[in-house]
Length: 415
Image (cartoon, rainbow, N blue to C red; front, top):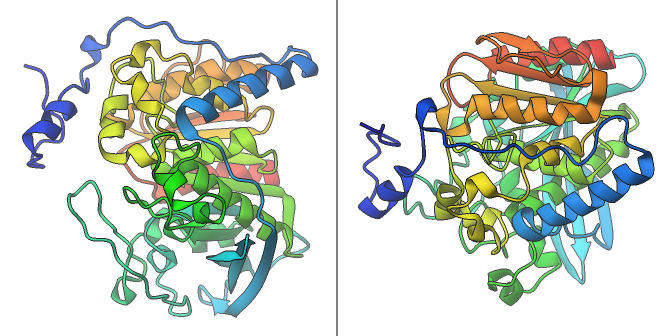
């Protein structure tokens, strides 16, 4: 009997029916033909530029939507600073004020700088999903009150933390470990950039560029994931303005939906030296044509606002989608690509993430994963040059074991 998706969740019958159309059994994966990357390491530069532009435009038009331009006015305001992490770090809170056509939006960036440093330092950057308070127990991090959206279902949970939940997800950030290794680390809450909620694209930076009617229109040209990319770009702008940060050693990372965002950023912005996707799954690092785990129908069912209105046309055509994620990841070359999966995360399809990473590696040539690379055992990583893949035991998350491998690899590249 075919395995039931999300057992114990008590989904409404119509949602359960869609969930059960996902395939969670390896022997039921239908035949598929992997799409090759648009170029390899020997392709002439002019041809790489032409093909990259074409692939990027395809993803923009049919999946992620357009990324707005830089706003008319951008300013950075230091709102607080102090020692943190038992004296290991200097904490700074920086308001990134974005203004366009007379309207403004503020992103609150939390930055930790190692106090023991010589010269400029490399910096990790990532969006968080539950507020800056969720990333650390540091009492110096300011709690900014917010309006909480009602939660109509477990799939649409406004999980931002309150004052009494400091550090709820600190294991995903490992600030002390990162700082001790010699790196700075920065984060902004994704909700500051764009509300992660249906019909709320107007509640965020997109309202600086589009009217409410345009954002609610079935012809809208942008989507939530591209808004989050825009937010990361403004964070990069802010980090470039900080004298202690080495703007040539910026590393962007993301878990799950933020991993999808990280890869889309890497395909559009040349500034990050390294992009890290952790458990990003469908429309992230997973090969879509391999019909296993979350499918297009399920993503459209509960997070259609992440993508443009064209996206549902791929429902039922996962194995024939005309663009696939190995092509997207190839646009990151020759910069460093790091993909992490979790053994017990079937909906993100770890093996499909590995396959896409291996296929994309032709864009890095000898610095990519070798063509004969095999799926590693849990707890092992492969690739130590331009592309790395790590499989962690356990479920959908980013934890200390992830950071141990990330830092081991990154120290060899940036310190």
